[in-house]
Length: 350
Image (cartoon, rainbow, N blue to C red; front, side):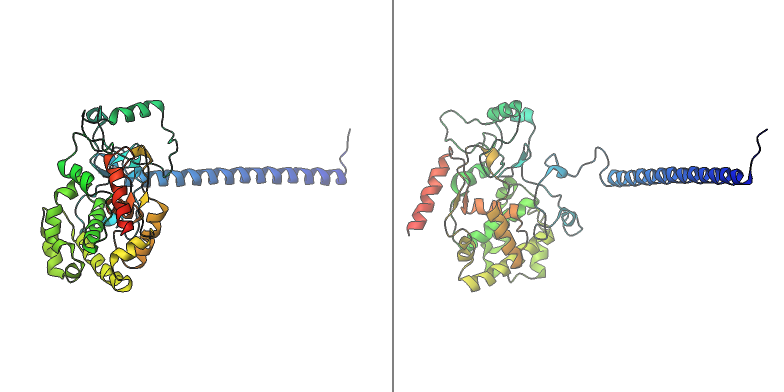
């Protein structure tokens, strides 16, 4: 018969105690891991529910049929963020320039379905350099279908089609890309470009005469002196579709132009100084290469914001530079490309 000595008894007791303690620690560790996993799962679920509450499935804030989440439209203090666009003072539903394949159209015309665009189409832009955008062969074939023109007609930029509005085509043929040096005209184009945050170019151009009348032919001296009653009267005109905050931006920009003109002699001297008084020539062969914004538009935007200008984010500034001829972005195959270059050369020679 085996006898258990007190020494052996103490060892066995110590071993059992150690084993029990190790088992307890393992259970506690396992329980701790489970709690961490549960907390992580609850955190993920909470974030998911928040996203669902903010953006419920099937409900998208859209402009011209596009989800705002797919846009790269610059948003900063000067662009008036989308949240401010929906505030009580800015009641008009914000629209965005036309996107084609996720890129920006220099014209911001209304996007229509692919079915309606087969055979003809709108324009777009893409990367700054002529690089392959990574689209598949099917998309390239669709793009080729979009580029068309009437037999015997002038060869225009590919976003101008037989369905384009007359005012839209006229602006392309006569104004877009032509170097502008008059302060009033530059002020007008800056104001119209700022309106792209709510409208597209076609809508803006149709109301161009009304805007000229409302803002005294865009004379900065007159607009800068507009008071609260003037602002209220313009924003109350439903035909203009300008919220009060947008009208204030135009008035504030007029005041800024006056300050810049005193410092540099004219607003034209200041703004053209950013490009050494020579237009930037894109030489793009396809609309998908035209950029949404450029390093130069970002630099100009930053300086304008520093000087107190509003609605002058990099995208808006780039649209302004295109419209005022600071950037000649007609496609090289467009009849206006060479004409705008000649005008720029003639201005440089004088």
